Length: 102
Image (cartoon, rainbow, N blue to C red; front, side, top):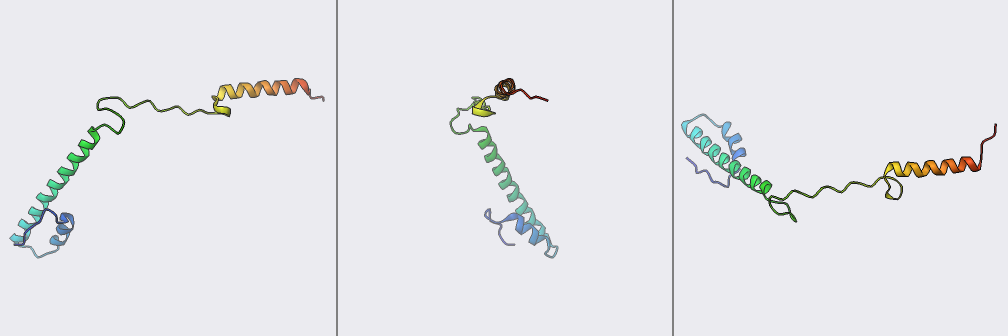
């Protein structure tokens, strides 16, 4: 029975071996690939968990991330209410200086 290497592409080998003639050797070989694939997947999950548990750059472990900066909206980085009130004042001044006649 051919050896199964940890470096094999186990998913590809399983697909190819599934098409082979059914023998006891085939099923033992397939199970060997499945075990090694499961070990690889477990190692990958452990590595991902370790990366997720680690702190991102510039942040110590256990420290909360900084609050996101709130975007400034409106003219000259004013909030919308301030921008609207200055527009309202300008409109009122314009109307008082140039009254509409009917």
